[in-house]
Image (cartoon, rainbow over all chains, first blue to last red; front, side, top):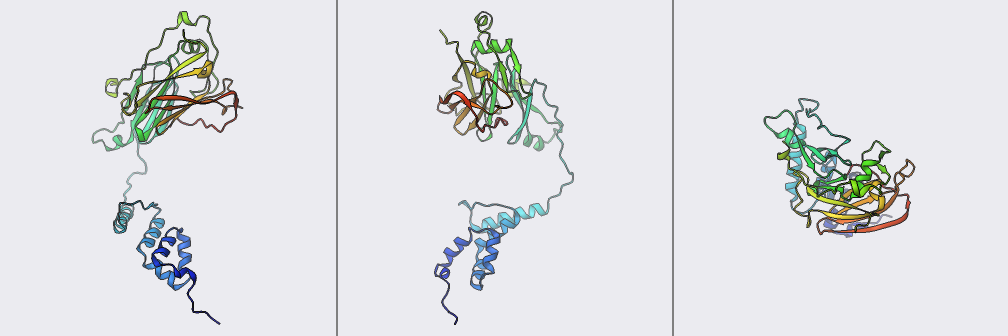
Length: 225
Length: 102
């Protein structure tokens, strides 16, 4: 004996069902389509769910933050898809011809749009140089990348830290007499990494020989050139 | 009379692209007074939003205890204060990765 009563899930409104289904992954959405004709129609007719499926197929994740309507999102997605279909890669790779600035114990890493080389160390000139990848490629006349160098006058920079979202560079340097002198006296590096140091104290002759180290002053990129 | 058992470190928040003092920092430099030979040790730093985390590791660095952790300093670079948030008499093992400083 068959029952004509609709399953409890269909007691929910269509809007609520769409909201629920929109939180499923594409595979589960397709599974829902196969469950019954009513769910299938709901999914096929829903612009939101169709948009979610399309973004998933395109490999795009849209957190659906407020600010854009669904038609606007669809237009943006279509533009994105078209741009990828029409992309013309004439060369398989890009080349930047930029000799790395000379410096002792350089550490290289990428930092947002920048490629950075830092120089740390006791008793030596510290600072960092960076290559702006965006500027390099957008420039009209330069085919050779230009490094920007920031020098820090304080010789004993222990470590740098950077935060791209704040355009922030942090230098931590040693300014006390004892450290500067004793490291200059007995600097033993245990690892090839520049920030791993180990040294002993030389406190007895310290105050006589070591000069105080002032505040770091920085020069701008323009002054370096 | 300065305490010879302490070492002073200076923190300079700068504009990355120019090297000038960062406009959001309330002070151009901040001082940390670290214990004894701490600054000789394994140390690293990381920016976490409004704060800078600076940690100093074990003085006897070996490959076995490369990740040990002794003291952590919390630096509010925008507000302009420094706090020693953790100080242990002996080092402990910690999952402290020494990656690039960003």
